[in-house]
Amino acid sequence: MQHRSRDGEREPRARRDRIVILGSGEFACRLVEAMRRARRPRYTIAGIVSDMSPAPDELSGIPVLGTAGNLTRVVEQTGATRVIVAVSDRRARLPIRQLLDCGLRGIDVEEGVELYEHLTGTVAIEFLTPSDLFLSRRFGRSVWHDRLARAVSIVAAIAGLIVLSPLLGLLALAIRLDSPGPIFFVQDRVGLNGRPFRLIKFRSMHPSARPKSEWAADNRDRVTRVGRLMRKFWLDELPELWNILRGDMNLIGPRPHPVSNWMLFEMVLRNTSQHGHRIPYCSLRTKVRPGLSGWAQIRYGYANNLEEEVEKVKYDLYYVKYRSLWMDFQILVRTILLCITGTGTAALEAEPDRPVPLETAGSVRVQG
Image 1: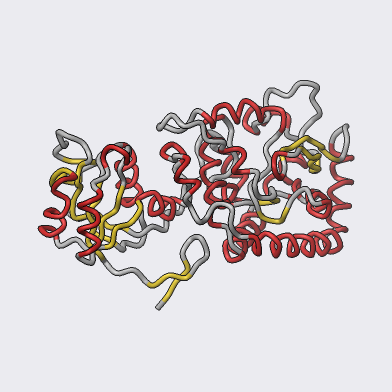
Image 2: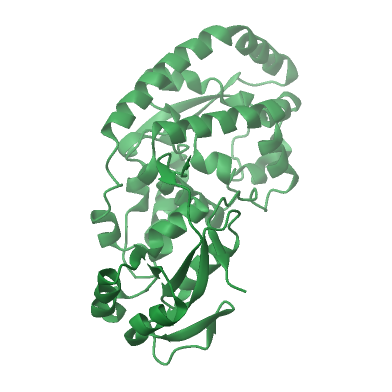
């Protein structure tokens, strides 16, 4: 029997394999924690093989059974069927001969980064290196997806504007009667390939010459009565259907970031990698057309500070890397459900400093 993975591709129902993790740095710790949060166990962690000397006794409660030079022996002793590589500095610590020996013995050797991505639905940008981007077959692909997604977005925008025109008229009237100011809120956003465009939304706040910031939590006191209702059901986003028709956006994609603090955001992200590489994450994020809703929007929600913005980028890059029509469909269905129930924005307004809990449909059980 088969099921669909998070990136929309079919994969066989997983066996309960025994795995050995190669690596004992911070990324290996992150990987173990992601495995522990998994909902559907696929693997059992038999132990850790350290890439450092001297090796620690344990890592996040998992026993360290040896160092990289003993990898083959540890695999034999534990009966492992899979080795997950989670080494921090591969140039100095990757035991090539031991890994080749495991492969010749029929032991699967897998990249820990991709496992982490599928467990969390994010890209671990702190541990990315330029080679991870250049050698990945995922980044830069999906030409046919992008063309089909654009066609579907145009059809959906036309249909939406026609079907929802009575609702759009009622909302415009309600905004006009509720508070003084324009009906629409227009803001410069960063679009495809970094080009700015004018995003159109229904105004949900009282006008202000100098807003505190671009983040919603800092402007909660300015939200109007009608604006609060619209935000709860994401109705203030409906005029963006016009942006889709204009070619500024798609139905699904990373949410466009305001131009006003783009430079600050780009500077913070460029200094995120723990390897010291200044990777242009923002450029990667803008390689696909922004969307009315996206993977980060349904999995994380709204960001209210730079730290949360960095977290959202991890989800956006996951979408850029694994995007597919099936993934777009899942995002669309989840968005519609959030709009109908009004749970997404309402929960964030109630607790603005706590992100929406992740649904980690993962795959690993920790032994013991």
